[in-house]
Image (cartoon, helix red, strand yellow):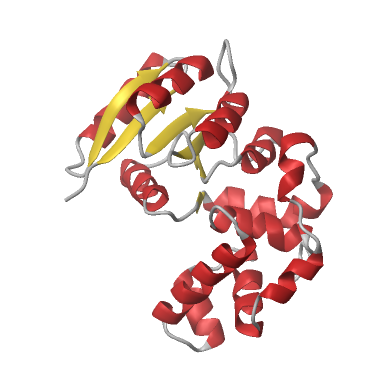
Length: 226
C-alpha cells in the first residue's frame, strides 16, 4: 500500500496539530512536515515533495494564495487543497485559478478530511458541497484577472470533444458525481471515467475543478441553468 505524503500549512498551531493527528492516524497517510506561513509551506514542499499540501488561505509572511500559485507552478506533482473558514470568498476563486485542486472548510469532519486527501492524491478534485453550489451559481459574475487568465478558453476548443464528452463536461460543471453522470447519460461509471479522462486530456486541464472553470469560461454552460 502506497503512503500519501502530506504537508499541513496553517498559522494556527492547534489547527496544524489537529489535522496532523487525524491524518497520521490513517494507515495510508503520513504528515511529513508542517508550516506556519506560505513561505514555509513552499520550503516544505521543495524539501519533502509531498503528494498533497493542505494550505490555509490566510497566513502571515505569505498568504495561501501566493503560496498556491508558486507550488502549482514549481511542483505540479503536489496537489493543493485550500483550507478556509468561510463557505466561499474571493480567495476561493483566485485559488481556483492559481491551480488548487480542492477546497475544504476548517470544520470538516475527520473522515471527510482523510477522504479529501485521498481523493485529491488520486487525481480527482475536491470541493466542499457548499463551495461547489456557490461557485456554480456565482461563477458568471466572477472573472479573475492575472495569472489565471491563461485558463480561459475560447468555445472553439469544445469542438475537440465528442458529443458525449461535451455532455459529460456540462454535467461535471453542474457538480455531478461520476455515478450521477452515469445515471443521466445511461452508461456505466467506467464509461464515465473514460469520458472524464478524455475531457481533461483533450483540453489539457489539471482536474475536475478546472473542467468547471473551462465549461463556464467557454460558454458550455451558463450559471443557474439545469
